[in-house]
Length: 128
Image 1 (cartoon, rainbow, N blue to C red):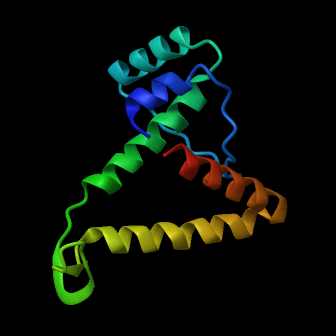
Image 2 (image 1 turned 90 degrees about the horizontal axis):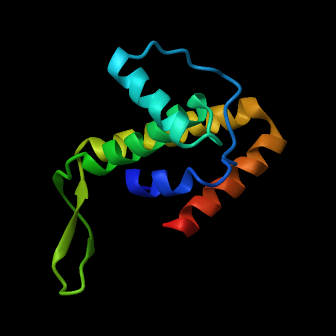
């Protein structure tokens, strides 16, 4: 999701499952002012919802911005038959760590939350 898509989705109610753990942050004054402005512009969204959604978009962009570093092992070929090399940069490690932490969070949340989380993930994939 891009920031533009996030702004468009602010007109709809949020339905993504949440963790049981809360994260407390202290915002810089300029960020807090901009958050308050967004909350005023989109009265259906609480500041906490906006923080959650903005963080999600930012994390997607961080993952997308991680550099691809070609390794030595060929893992596939492209349409022209050229070799595609494994990524030995930070992306595979980040993705594996994120999957591991997600499984741990799902295990703590229980089966009902797991079902809702999977449904939300499926919906997110369809939106792309």
